Length: 202
Picture (cartoon, one colour):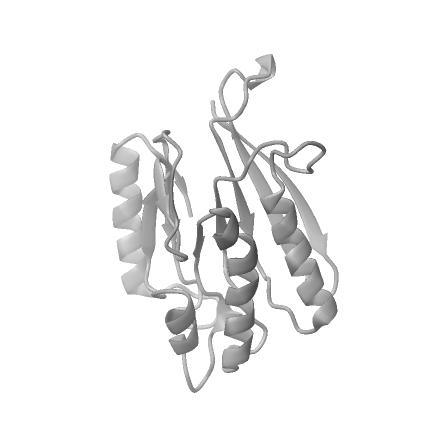
């Protein structure tokens, strides 16, 4: 079976976790390198300079992947953000700061990222308007593991087909809720991926 070896670091105060997941081959016990490596991050919402610095440290750790002495032993092919990107979603300055941070680290180093909005990326007056303007559609999205095109326009070809990523908005239909329409689409996409013998990563 395929093994996801995940190490995670929790940032205090924001309760932010950065999951560094490595897809290992079935013969990992023999020391074979993984087919590809990806990182999954959530809750990057920085409320002050200290939290912003911690977010930057996480991204710098990802960028350093594969370099001698790096925490992540292999280069990271792409990054998945699972929501709560900003602290105050109505403030455009928070979105531009998020993008500047991403662009000077991931984008500048050729690393694509995909993101979904979380409940903290939604505002009573604006809904997901800022998230959609700065990141991308809040609708359900999908991508295979063989080719990933990021929200930053960067494309990576891992050369390995076997995981199907489905991005979903967990605050569509209510706080920490998934809409009925989205659930129907997610189930349809998951069934299609399963029929192709792909593993599903939501």
